[in-house]
Image (spheres, helix red, strand yellow):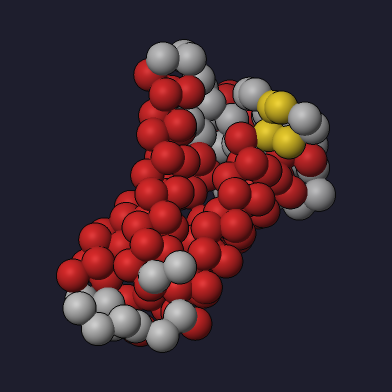
Amino acid sequence: MKRQNLVALAAGGSVALLLGAFAFQHLGGLPPCKLCIWQRYPHVAAIALGALALFFPLPVLIALGAIAALSTAGVGAYHVGVEQGWWEGPTSCSSGAIDTLDPDALFDQIMAAPLIRCDEIAWQFAGLSMAGWNMVLSIMIAAVWIAALRVRPTSA
């Protein structure tokens, strides 16, 4: 497969995942939490890098596309761990320990808490949450980026 085709496939994968996230948000009524938003930024970067790499197929742009895909996969893995209770997430979107808080501090924490929590699974399919699917699919997209990097460029 040609390098440009692989780059287009990889960037298109990020487009598809980003459109899927927006569909869940705007059509499915599932607003994103803080970690869900964090997972979107690397996809935007991968899309921009893919557009650039189609016109300027520099290995550095393709490598950065792979890094972007792996970055969103990493945030997705972190988010899955927060959802499963393996570790705590950001205090701004996860529940924390309350036994050390006085009633006023507890009230302030409750009032400052966002409506969308990072440690609750809003949707899942086949045992994976949206964050889990983002992780798995982003690793696959990273593999396509890496395959594009390994292909010798063809002359026009």
